[in-house]
Structure formats: C-alpha cells, structure tokens
Amino acid sequence: MYWNERYECMPRPELEALKMERLQQTVERVYHKVAHYRKAMQAKGLEPGDIKELNDLSYLPFTVKTDLRDNYPYGLFAAPLSEIIRVHSSSGTTGKPIVVGYTRQDLNNWSELAARSLGFAGVTDQDVIQISYGYGLFTGGLGIHMGAERLGACVIPASGGNNQRQVMVMKDFGTTVLACTPSYALVLAEEMAELGLTNEDLKLKAGVFGAEPWSEGMRKEIENLLGLSAHDIYGLSEIMGPGVAMECSAKEGLHVFEDHFIPEIINPETGEVLPYGQTGELVFTTITKEGFPVIRYRTRDLSSLSLEECSCGRTHVRMERIAGRSDDMLIIRGVNVFPSQVESVLLDIGYLSPHYHLVVERINNLDRLEVQVEVSAEMFSDEIRRLEQLEHQIKQRLDSVLGVSCKVTLVEPKKLARSEGKAKRVTDKRNL
Ligand code: DLL
Image 1: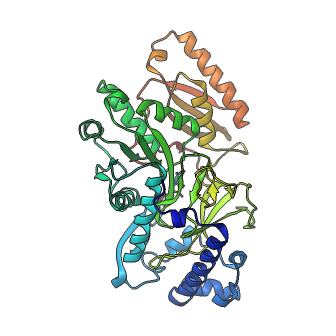
Image 2: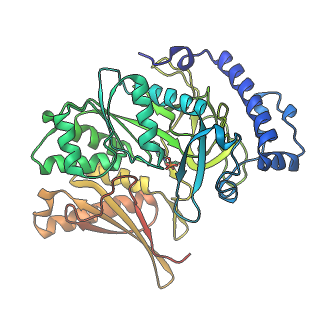
Image 3: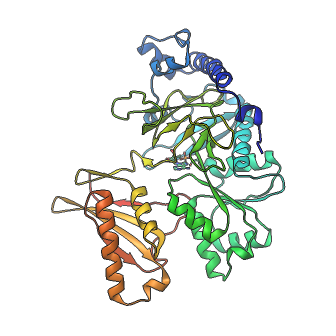
C-alpha cells in the first residue's frame, strides 16, 4: 500500500520533467532572494537561465557546512521571517549551530514526506506509534510526529529518556510502531529485559530507526529483541529532517524522495559527479523548499545510488545505507577505518552485545585503536581462558577486515555509556 502512489510510483520521464521544472524554480528563487547563492553563482558566471537541463545541475556551486555557519542565523533564508513558522537547529560537534527555517508549505511537504516514510514501514491509521526521538530543536521528534498525525496513526509523543517509563508506555499503551535511533532501540530492549519483559509482552510490529549509521547485524539484533521489522530512515536538518529517504519492504536501499530532493554522488576529493553504483559523498539539492532551499549541499555522508527497479514498485532512486561520514572516518596509521566496519565484525561474531566504543590514542608517535566491546552476561561469567580466546578471535577478525592492528578490550555488560539519541562511538584522544 502506498501513501501517495501518484508521486511514489511516478514514471521516470514524468519525474525527470517535474524535477527539472522544480529545479529551475528553486534556482530562480535562491538567485533572487539569497545573496550567498547569487554571489556564488556569479563567481561561476552563472545565471538562473543557464540551467536548461538536469545535467546542468553540476555547474552550480556546492554548499558546505561552513556556508551555513557563516550565514548564521538567518542569512540563507529565502523567505521573510513573517512567512517562517518554525525553525530547527543542529548543533554538530564544533562551533556555532546551524539554523533552518520552514514556511507553512515547507511543513506541509515535510509532513507529507514523513507520512510517506512511515507508510514505507507499513504504518497505517490503525497503528499506535511511540516517538522516542528527541523533541525540540532536533528535527527527529517533531518531524516524525507531523508525519504520523498526517497518516492518522495514534501518536505517543514520548521523546527520549526515562527508559523505564518508555517500556511501561510501550506495554500499557499497546505501541505497535517504535521510532527512535537504533542505538536507543537497543537501550530500550535492555530495559525490557531488566523489567523481565520479552517482545511477546509487547505489540510492536515495525520500527522506524535512523539519525545515525547502523549495520545489518544491528538490524537483526534489534528485530530479534523487539520482535519487529526494522526500517532505516534518513534525513538531515540542512535538507529538511527525517524523511529525505526511506527504506521500503525490500530493504535494499533507501528511496530518495526525488520529487523534493535531487541526490548526487560526488568524489569528495575532486567534486566530480560519479555514476550510479559508485560510492562517494552524497549531495542534495532541495527543489520545493521555500524557507531554506539548499543547492548542492555536501552532506559528508558516504553512499551510492541505484536506479535498478525495486520490487516495491516505487520508482525513486535508491541510496545505499550510509556507510559512515567522511568526517567519522578515522585514519589509523594511514589506514581509513569506519566505526561501521567494526560494528559489522563485532555483530558477526556472536557472544557480544551490540554496545561498543572506539578509543584512539597516539602513543610514542604511533596511533593505537582500542575497540571496547561488551560481552554477553553468560559469557562474562565464564572462565578467563574463554574470554581471552574470544578477545583473540575478535582481534584477528578486526585486524584482517580493517587492515590495521587494534587492541580489543572486553568489558562487562552495561559498562559502556548509553545514549538516548545518537550514539557516540568514538573518542579520539590524539591532538591532530
Ligand atoms: O538526524 C534527522 C533524522 C532524524 C533522521 C530522525 C532520521 C531520523 P541531523 O541531526 O541534522 O538530522 O543529522 C544528520 O545524521 O548527515 C547523517 O550523518 C546522520 N544520519 C541521519 N539518518 C541516518 C541514517 C537527523 N538513517 C546526519 N543512517 C546525517 C546513517 C544517518 N546516518
């Protein structure tokens, strides 16, 4: 069942024509309303009329995070504040936050796309959805909230935190759909176990998990523990929030809502646009936004695109699940390492809980990667020799997959910090 069949299954030629028309409108809009884009286009000798076909998109200048910071707070808005009815903000790890604004029409489109996304996971007006993403300046809570209301589901605006109450609500209110970060879903599963509950005591059927990278192994773990079908939802504040792309029942990539956003994959070093199938940095151009349109925004997220037909019948291009961010990538003694690679190895091995943390240090001018991982309770109470064997086994697998030697430290269950929102997977103690 589709939420909006006309757009979700639009034949490609019609979709391409729609994208073109909307791209031209957006370029006109930013050129005339936002000084930054006008200057950036003029610097390349471009006028809106130069964008005559979709491929011309590649002539337009990129937008990067610092452009957003430099125009803090409202410098990139393309509508007067009187027309902006909501702002959100994303803090990032360093410096000033960025602020994004939405007109009434923007919120209307966002709720449509969030409703569509929930529809991908099979959510209907019969469902009770517990939204345990943070509500506030973060786009997760309110974004999914609008979509769920639009869909007519019964919304529990739980927000993050207070794990015990979350589980009680899940059980007593008959929650059928859980929306939160995948790491928080695991925290809630742990809390359930502590309260002596299993997924048999709950009515969960689907999960809408995103806002951070997660592996296939993590999906299996969550699905087993919570007894639901877990779907990946992707988005970022700069482009809109949750609902830029969503995983359908095929679970082979996330459809990007191309009637609102045009994705590209570029070589992060050269900026060159890469063909379908190749991995690189995801870049988005919004084509319906009024308040905060963005041209060729470099997300730093790594993925690839595929136009292969999808068994769900939707025609929109699919992006591969995010492998990581180029700025999450650790360079250990010259070798590129992503936390997601470590996660896949750990979850493949068994006996381990999906809670892990990477610590990078520089000792005597040499980088050292330590992988801390919790073992299961049964394993932890076992004899030391077995634990040593396990440590050795993990180290061997990690060394060969990562291509760099690391130190493995097994820690007792529940030792590592838990988060309500995005998990922090890395502590880099090097002063680089
Ligand atoms: O995380 C929006 C969101 C909320 C998406 C709820 C999904 C669910 P930001 O805080 O601006 O917005 O962070 C955006 O988070 O560039 C990615 O690096 C990462 N991210 C978001 N979704 C996924 C995902 C929200 N499904 C940044 N897989 C993005 C991997 C994701 N990474």
